[in-house]
Length: 311
Image (cartoon, rainbow, N blue to C red):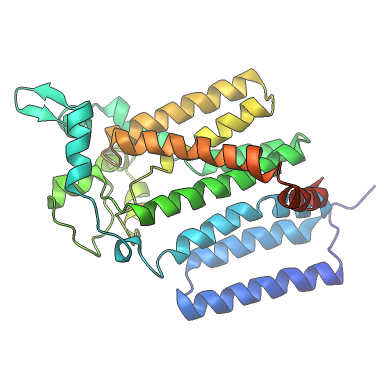
């Protein structure tokens, strides 16, 4: 009977530990070490040192690690230091295109839902929003364990590209979320702490500070365009279609995607414009990977070498 455990070679061990040490040194010097850094490291090392199959999975998930590192490093040079923050024009554009006429005048959909919300929808919006990263990761891992290693890696890389394209959008057009206008008006205030907004109603319903714990650590609230919440699960849906996954999986991912789109507006975390641009970002990332990266010979060869490590 073959042992479940099989350790990597000395060379693989040296490379793995060496790279993590370099990461810790750089993070300590420039952005500071946080508990999340140690959680990511521990998760990766457990997979890497357990056995060969999980080692391949750890390599497949490297783009997710790079996403976390990239997001963390945006603290080093916030987007509002690059371009002016859009607060009012985005709000007015949303109202012009999607405004809802009421007795109190024209309201944005976010403003309308602040006045009209229901416990069941508050609960569902929280559940949908909790899916934004766990579901893509579960999809990636699920593809790997059903033998679709190559598709799993393609999705993982596409997920990273979605983030990088979205981060570029953050720097091109720093923008405030809808709740910011409700609480602070149209004047940008650098250093504003993140706000749970409508997701606070979910915390109240379940009696836990889930979203309060997440958003109180947000270091930059001016990163609403595009909505990456709207993109993540949708990219998983696109790859479920491209990879010919079971119909039930495609329908489930489509349902969760639409639920997140609705929740983003219902809870005042994004405008409809943000969500639409997030969906567009997902399409762009998939197109860049599938139509350019995997067809251009140098990058195609690089992918083949990477893919060989996990297949």
